[in-house]
Structures are given as structure tokens and as C-alpha cells.
Amino acid sequence: MTFYCHSNELEGVTALLDIASRMAVRLVDEQRAALEQTAEILARARRTHNRVYMAGAATPALRAFLSDAGFLAHALPNVVTTLPNEAGPSDVLLAFAPGSGLDSLIAEARVRALTTVGLCSEAAELGDTDVSIAVPGVDDDSVLSAYCFVMSVMARGAEARSTAADAA
Image (cartoon, rainbow, N blue to C red; front, side, top):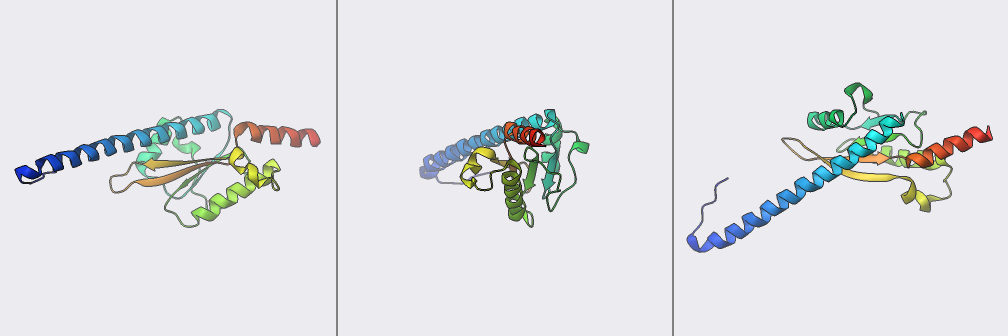
């Protein structure tokens, strides 16, 4: 990119470029931190054999990142428009925006998590039982907003399954 300016404007342009440069560095750092956090959640789900459901469309770059993070391509199911009945409270829903029905799908996941964990009347605890992370995806044409929604804390899901097994 080339800037043309008068000598008396040079200081202002330099200051603007400096600000833009610092903002770009900060954005890259935020992307890296978000992607690393997503990789950690996915790796934990893989270790505990939890399922991962996808909604929306991931860019090739984001798919490559997920693969590098320890999820092979075949471990990522096809795009879903509704959660399968077998989805449990500790499964992971990866929802990539923009996508039709994304809000209702995430809402369904939240309700399913509350129901499965037995917290229907404890909606106030929702913040303790799920994690929502905004993940900027890398794309040549645009920045893909991705939301990684963990339906429940892994330990809470395991506890719910254990309690249900004991009751049976």
C-alpha cells in the first residue's frame, strides 16, 4: 500500500500507520489465543471420546487448523441443522457463522444441556455449565466468525451420566 502526502502531513500519516500496525498485531494475538483455546477444548473432547457436531461452513483454513489441533478430518461429522438425540451434555457443538438457523441451533444446544444435566429450573447456573468462545477464522476474503459452544463442562456431563447410571 502506498501513501502520497505533503511533508507537513507525514507525521500524522506515520501516527495512523503506527496505530493500524498495533491494531493488526493485537488482532493476530487475539486470533491465536482464541484458536489455541479452541484447540484445547477440542483436544479434551477427543481424549474423553466426546462427539463434535458442526453447523454452518468452515473455511479450508479452519478445517486445516482443526486437523492440526488433533482432530482428523474424519472425526468431524457433516454439517448438522439440528442436534441428534444422542447428543450429550459434554459433547461439543461447533457453529460457524454466518449460517441459517444458527441462533436456534445454539439455543437448542443450551436447552439440551440444561435438560440433560437436570438444570431446567436452574437457568441462573447456565454460565457455570457452558462455554462460548468467539473464534476468528482465517480466510482470504473475509474473517469468519466461529462460535465454539461447549454444551457443558466435561466434569459436569460425566457426573450427570454417573448419577443417571446409579439411579438406574
